[in-house]
Length: 185
Image (cartoon, rainbow, N blue to C red):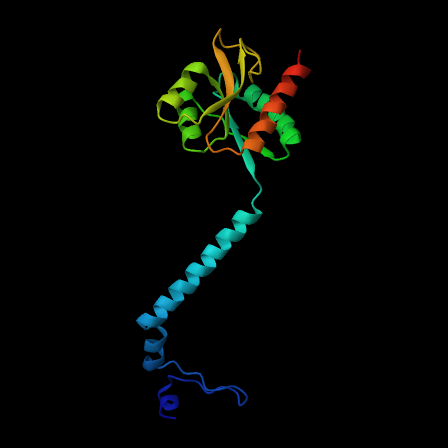
């Protein structure tokens, strides 16, 4: 009861035990062995949460174009296209505009984008950087399937996908664009 007299411990009601943090208790709580155990338990919980998030995350198809017109018009047109693709492929589609072709190619190569509207020169640039897996799935000239109202030039444009995209999804996208082309003739 010497600790009670010093004021370091407080007596608890009769049905509870006397709780007292002494220097010896503190040292055992923070011993190197216990710290390792705490770290492993925390890491296990963190990895478990990551697995749960990955399992229940909704897949998203990330698409982009170069902003070649008024941003409001581009956003409206791409939202219409995203809605159409969502119905055709059965997954959420998200539009992520890029300010220039180099930024778009870089995002495609680093797998930040899945599907891009790209001209032949930039498609060749992506392939020349050692990424031969960038595939053109639908190709049109003079503005066919282009997201803006105006055709940019006589260049050939195509919808290209990144390497590593699921084959079934690639086929669904190809079918969706071919259906879109047939509906707009």
